[in-house]
Image 1 (cartoon, one colour):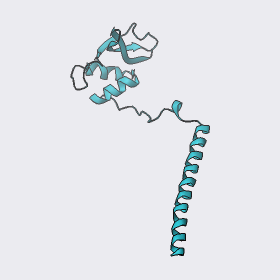
Image 2 (cartoon, one colour; image 1 turned 60 degrees about the vertical axis):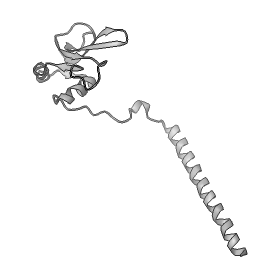
Image 3 (spheres, one colour; image 1 turned 180 degrees about the vertical axis):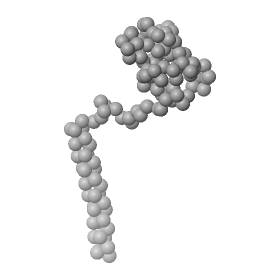
Length: 134
């Protein structure tokens, strides 16, 4: 049986409240769980002490038994020093630009560079003509 430490949603519509639970990975999100470990209330300010509360001893026990926390809980538990913070990439691969878009950006940069060089050359050319006439 694979155990996950995850959030189980409660609260009313647009007013979430989560229980931190140890549950079988195959169980539904808000369904059956093995043990309640704490709570998380995202509606409270971040500096409030009761925003995220857990029984640290029980969390350590479940982690020692091989339970895997979800990504969100990894982030919350890392603030308490129970696990290492997850490595979150700066930009997801899914939203990265495709090859054609990158080509268009390169072409625009080249055109802008060429236009800037032409403008610089145009400024220098009249200056040279005026000095030759004088």
